[in-house]
Length: 105
Image 1 (cartoon, rainbow, N blue to C red):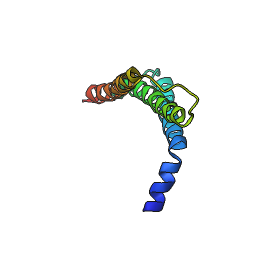
Image 2: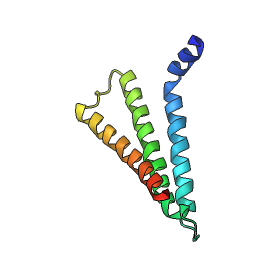
Image 3: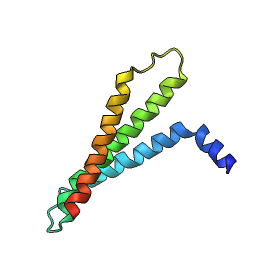
């Protein structure tokens, strides 16, 4: 188990990139498909699922760039208020997911 943990910690930046890419592409695909005319109740909730995917993907990429900037000593460190913006962006993405679930109920 420690080998797996060491592997994941050593490759956390590519993992964040792929995780963000998966969310972003899924959100983009759902956004493109949500414009189709249908009678299903799901179609009215799909824009919120698309918004979640896109915003959460961007959030993961911002976290990835933050980790990259920590490893480069010549770059300025991000200001303290940037953490609040990242937290707000994450909250916005989960609000979209909550709204998607609410619209389905």
